[in-house]
Length: 374
Ligand SMILES: *[C@@H]1O[C@H](CO)[C@@H](O)[C@H](O)[C@H]1NC(C)=O
Ligand SMILES: *[C@@H]1O[C@H](CO)[C@@H](O)[C@H](O)[C@H]1NC(C)=O
Ligand SMILES: *[C@@H]1O[C@H](CO)[C@@H](O)[C@H](O)[C@H]1NC(C)=O
Ligand SMILES: *[C@@H]1O[C@H](CO)[C@@H](O)[C@H](O)[C@H]1NC(C)=O
Ligand SMILES: *[C@@H]1O[C@H](CO)[C@@H](O)[C@H](O)[C@H]1NC(C)=O
Image: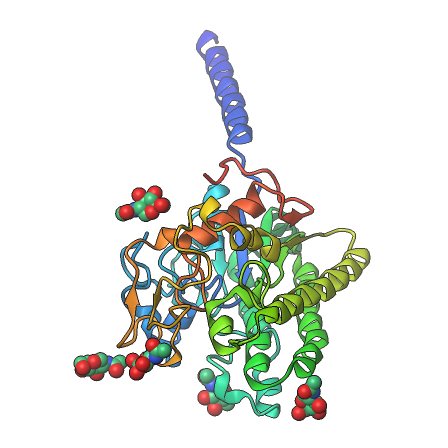
């Protein structure tokens, strides 16, 4: 009898302690599901062959943190990697590389480098298919998620409970739609692409909410007028075309316009779905801090010149891009914000992730992370 009581007390204490432990270590998010393009792809494009951009499968891509190329379009970690770290979750496995018995309970990454918000048929119809890196647009990525769902959760109750504790990142996506339109046309044509792109993004968000998503983070576009690639392609002899950071006013103005349209559309989705929290991630504002004062943020080689490239004023040369013959990588990527002309360095992505997780560049804020990003 005595032993029995002791056992009951012991097991009660044990349960109690376990409960306390599980509360104190409980994470704000149990899983992350990510949709997007090269800004957040952790290996899908490489796994699908990377025919249009094979260099991401080799050095110097991945040199900083992983010490080998992983399919990430950077020297190291991406914003999504820093977010996963901050919430105590593993790096997201790329969907196309999943193995049969892989544990996917902490999330999956569906992003593909080169992906567009609009389906490839839009670009084929517009005569822009030569620019397309991939057909794996946002709607294809959403189909992958739906296909995978039965391996994540089974009953509606089970799925609702699991997804209510998951973070869904929808983007950055749409940046390539804009890039392709920018290569091809004028600013009028560029503005024409905004409504369909924004609609494709809000449609995906609504579908995810219908699938059970309750917390969604939707990034806008970067100040693309500060990108080494845009600065090279649209170089101007007219000083008036540049702002005080040396960025192209027209394209930054366009990105701000696009972000405003996206924000207005998100507000409509919020009103229709009060059960969900839809957060806007201000990549523009978070990145603009280091474009304004690069040295102040450790980018002693400036924020506009690419670390890895084939020369020219922004170290970007279309015929000698990073990883190709004629290109060279800088000694220390963390002194540059721009990695290869198109994409940013790990140091810049860390800085943007800080702005989202530690604040104030997520509206409304993300749940408090157990680990602030240093
Ligand atoms: C996209 O799909 C079309 C039609 O199926 C195909 O011809 C094309 O090669 C694909 N493009 C890429 C980049 O995979
Ligand atoms: C932009 O291109 C369209 C279609 O080619 C043309 O109709 C329009 O006049 C152009 N606008 C400007 C401002 O150049
Ligand atoms: C760009 O790269 C090509 C090929 O390496 C080279 O011939 C050309 O001079 C480079 N242009 C600039 C501006 O550096
Ligand atoms: C780079 O240059 C080397 C030596 O000149 C050559 O063998 C190789 O095929 C070139 N690679 C590419 C991708 O052009
Ligand atoms: C690279 O630059 C950063 C920032 O200036 C500095 O903290 C770091 O020590 C440098 N790393 C190397 C290997 O020089």
